[in-house]
Length: 250
Image (tube, rainbow, N blue to C red; front, side):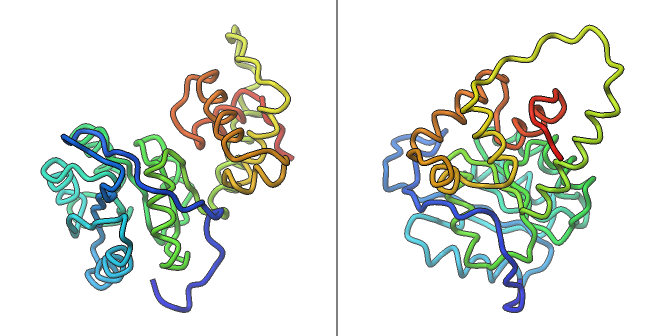
């Protein structure tokens, strides 16, 4: 990630203390977020490590060079967050993502890649990734992304979010002939407003500002949306909404 890459990254995320990490004895509010870095470029790994190690609430617990190492190290180290490339030797990041979810279920995975291919984005989401960020983002945004995903948010680069919405809007149109569908859960008008803003790639702070409500209220709406739709992440909620025509995409 060079200095020339200063493109606008994902929506700003409020800095927050790390919540207790799952699966370890005696966690406290001061426990750092445990991060595993996996990329086949050693120089890029070192750059990420240097930036993250400067953060008091983040600890880099290991680094690997391919998907196979990612799975083995996740099993041994039980990281909170895995920052991982998509295209790597021996075993790709997407294939490794599925295996990591089995080996270390509490780990949340963020794809950090140069690949802006829609197929890689869709497969990463299906494999359980909580984020998909392009390496064009400023390296200084990575600690914020780590905190956001650790806090339960899903992140996606804005340019990829638009591709995601466009693709699933097309899928929704092509599936009009489907028959005997179970009625979709009904969202309130406010929940629909929140969902539309999530679809635009806005974070909780931007949504709160847009709707003149508090961030806690936004979080409650997002949680209610996920519970109603029986989904696990913000990205899944947007995909579901487009597929079931709960969300109008123009």
